[in-house]
Image 1 (cartoon, rainbow, N blue to C red):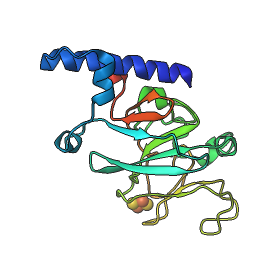
Image 2: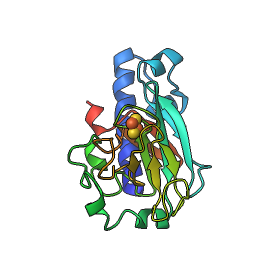
Image 3: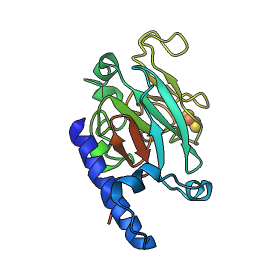
Length: 197
Ligand code: FES
């Protein structure tokens, strides 16, 4: 966690320095970061959006909109993370080789920090919004349901890392957008190392 946060912080400082250079204003990095809020127009164009995760309880999910698309942030419990182990044979792309995510999210948890799962809420079949069904054995899904996301449009199922199950219409895992931790209570959606410099 701390390494991820530190990386994110360094990255943000780099971006802040770059942006101040572009607009030619001599802000110090820290005050600039503290006051930096993208305008509505900048948000519409895809500017990073900062999320406060300080009140997100274990097992809960929050939703925001970035670039006109829903983004989910799930705070996974240890039990939720356990459900991600030894499930490869049930998944269509368990290693996320055919799916879209930043390199730092190409792991079983598909995350920088396993506790927080950040994902686009857009089904990879035809774009409906999958719903969080996090309880094991959810009666709306099946008795052996381990918890995950369910798309109500045509029944695609995804695990708690957004990895798609075999035999459903969605061809690939849910997409993980670029993101960075500002600190341990804030996540910035829309920014990662690949976009810096
Ligand atoms: S849009 Fe999700 S299963 Fe078809």
